[in-house]
Length: 542
Image 1: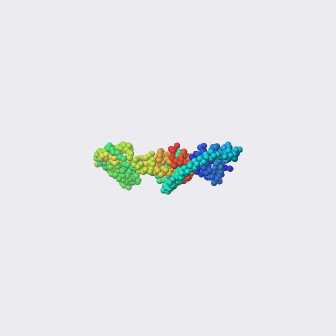
Image 2 (image 1 turned 90 degrees about the vertical axis):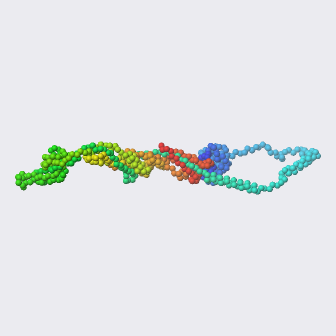
């Protein structure tokens, strides 16, 4: 037949032991006391245990070698056994030792003397006189004793004093009862302190940043924010080029061409004189087809011809008096009609190409450090800025005076600096990290994320390729055992320190358990969960 073994703790009181007997599901219960007998060293407590077992229809056996405890158990009719395997039996109560010596005298056994009835044994006159004197003395003494016993005055009971004593005694009894009620049912409180050890889970992945999508940890995508700040940068320089900006010489050129069809010389056609001077046609001119129906033009046709005005490429008197033939693209014959004229000399400072290149090099070295701080502020406190994502773009530098044009003063070269930076909102980081860490611990039982690592997340290796943005995200999360306060309270109520400690420390990740009782006389956790407090402490992640 199965039996239940209950180990009694030194701190257990009689109510705790009785509660364990009632909770046991077995009919036979073995009680194993500690080395120090403690609460069992009382015949009253022994009889309480016996009555409890009898009321619950159970049989209890005390496992002990102690003679005193065996005697107490025998008085309560509780069987004992030397160990869990031996047969229980009721211990014998030591019998009182009886003195058989003849200390009692039986008068009937006294010998009767032969002279018992003789006259010699009859009282004599002298003996009678002595007896009478003794009787008189005893008679004189008896009234004196009675006088001492009878008081001279009768005392009247003081009912006020009796009433005060009754009230004080009654108040004391009520106060004692109230104190016991408070001490047993209201005062007891327990605090269960659980110390848990967390472990580190690292998230280290390259993620794609999206500006218009949603965060998806499974696809390694995180929604990001993009901000821009622009500022115009400029440098000034002095023009060093020289150019003759005097009036340009003008003239007339006649084109001739032998062809069956007419042709057109467009405006802007460049013509070069024999001296290397360049003239430009002012407008379109059409050269007619060759002529054959006029005298002198048969059988050989006469070439078609047409004239147009030209202007020198640059100002200067050196373009005057130009005569002779000119050459040009798609031109058969071109000849000045008279000499050119009207050109004048006027030298001026102009912007050269070299001036612009030198100014552009200086402009490239110029920047504005305030742009980055402005970008960081533009994101707000709820965003984590990606420092490596900071980029600057510059527009093509443009001079305030075009190259080749006269500069009457300092020339300014301008460019627009555009600064770009990315950031990720804190909720998006939390979403990504929570999902990523949960995927790593999903195969572990009763694990919980205590810190997802968002507060110390790091970004590196930012790349921007054809508007595809990639960043490496690194974070260290802390995970540990998932402890429910209500479950802890349910497991702890009505139990002793050792039971709570052994039950909770069996949970993976719990490093230590401590139970604090209040007031000092409480040795077990109350059954009311409202009187149980659970404190949870985390150690540094390992």
